[in-house]
Picture (tube, rainbow, N blue to C red):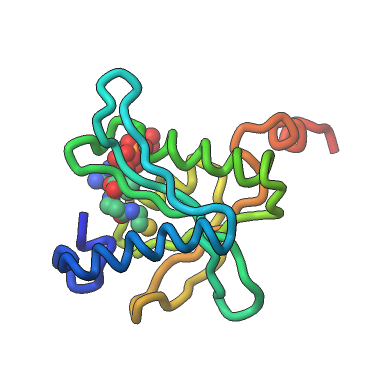
Length: 154
Ligand SMILES: CC(C)(COP(=O)(O)OP(=O)(O)OC[C@H]1O[C@@H](n2cnc3c(N)ncnc32)[C@H](O)[C@@H]1OP(=O)(O)O)[C@@H](O)C(=O)NCCC(=O)NCCS
């Protein structure tokens, strides 16, 4: 997992984890949205974490979707489920105009999650010194308006 989250691929040191968690909590205070932890309904077992964070890609502040699933629970549809739900909350309930996401080109699973959640490719950016693919989304995947616009006769 770490090769996709940390340029060196190493686990974060304990003080870096502490700073990360404090940053997540402060983000909620500053913006009113942030990171959610996801658990299996029956067992309560940790599945992953995902959320929204404010990012500045050079023009104006935007909101980024991010996610990560515990490696022993990969390929069960959890990332897609978490991401879809967050997109729905962001666009339908929070009233955001759109979201961005970015991922390493080699992260095929993450790219697939974004495609399945209705994101489209919008070029490349440099993040943490590495080339990333940029994605954008402005409607909930499979929403009635999206289906209508595809089905409507020209
Ligand atoms: C990326 C990640 C979140 C995907 O989580 P997941 O719960 O396994 O994803 P899903 O089960 O929802 O699968 C989504 C799609 O990706 C595909 N996929 C999952 N793992 C894959 C892999 N290793 N290689 C290729 N495709 C993969 C699935 O088959 C599915 O596509 P499909 O419906 O067309 O078959 C998970 O691999 C992860 O946590 N990686 C490390 C953290 C990370 O990279 N986060 C994103 C940073 S941008």
